[in-house]
View 1 (tube, rainbow, N blue to C red):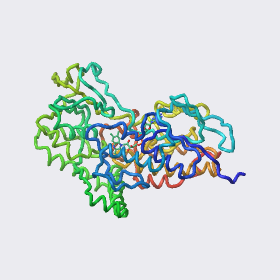
View 2: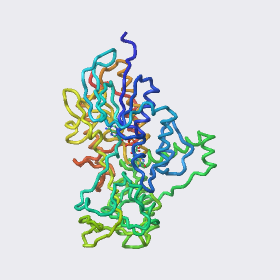
View 3: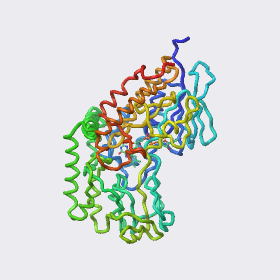
View 4: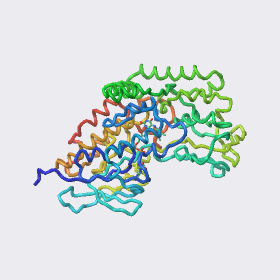
Length: 494
Ligand SMILES: Cc1cc2nc3c(=O)[nH]c(=O)nc-3n(C[C@H](O)[C@H](O)[C@H](O)COP(=O)(O)OP(=O)(O)OC[C@H]3O[C@@H](n4cnc5c(N)ncnc54)[C@H](O)[C@@H]3O)c2cc1C
């Protein structure tokens, strides 16, 4: 019976927002066996791990939602992290996703092996977890996230600090900050959010800045009960809000950063400068807070609380470089010791690690680590030659930064579902992108990157260790267009 659809099994790695969405959609699409492996004890990924004071999603709430679960209950323009975690949990509950998840199971190895046949595809991915589980799946979908592996700074003496010290993604809530001297290393979105949230509770706050950042001062307003009721009763109005935000961010901002909307780029630059001018009145502080690169080059920060907070008498912006950490605090290049009780490392994440701790062995025994030894790459962010039927959400060069990641992940998922359909419908046994097509695609991607604001003269976490920018260099519309339909000729015939 060759015309009968194949029954396929899919392993999803990671129960963050992306993995939960994919599992729900795969089951809805009729995939017989969907199993989600999550290394931690709870779902939610980013919104489970990050619990620092002031955590908000700085993409507007009504844009940061799944298309199938619009949410009239968002409390603010930019919702707190805990609210997003609750939202993901509710979506999982409403769609009975929990029953597909196996917790405390880190996937440590994937190997593409000859399978036992049985009417399905001839080869399988053998998956191994830390629990000792071994199972075979036709398809693997990686949803391991991008901002998942915390980066710890390499500063002499860090381990000798006598006070409490933790990464912002591992916040120690047993440590009270009340009336203490707090140091924060880093000036990205996380540090900015923490400063605004804690400055009034602490005795002294020292922010150690290596590079100043552009900050857009958008107010974080509460939605009124009337607005929530209106969205509940008139979902079309909530959709209009979404459409407006999508237009502004995906087609305005996203086009601006890739060099396709100079007007929007100039408006962003002016908005940031205005925010600085309006809120920082001390000339020296202002000079030290003014970046020497274009707005948008680093991930744009959104906060109307930061400048007022860093101007407070108990806050200090430290711009001398750090020479070492001592038991009592941080020593800077001017010889000064900044005495501290608590040191927070808001030093970000390694966005280039992907399945970093998992050994992936593909066709002919080749490993993904070897394939990516000169830099991560993929075909259209989704799959890698030599690793058939292994797909990525948030894979190399996905649109990241000031975008709604949920929208990115859903766009990628829809494409992956179409690839899976090629297998189910027996059009392909293996989905394996051609090497030459993938290489050409990545060459054009690198060429296009030169015209983006990210490559305009700053250092940022968008760059990998080879100096390549790991984001999407074209418009969001092109991303949606490229992932609208698989091009069969781009894949190995099998
Ligand atoms: C502080 C912070 C603020 C952010 N703000 C925004 C924002 O404003 N807007 C925006 O769009 N995005 C933001 N992001 C990005 C955010 O990560 C994404 O929006 C989204 O939550 C990613 O979902 P995910 O499911 O792809 O990944 P994650 O949320 O990272 O989830 C990945 C999951 O995979 C699990 N996992 C990883 N490896 C394995 C393995 N080998 N085996 C089993 N399980 C594994 C992890 O434990 C985790 O649960 C922010 C991120 C951080 C850290």
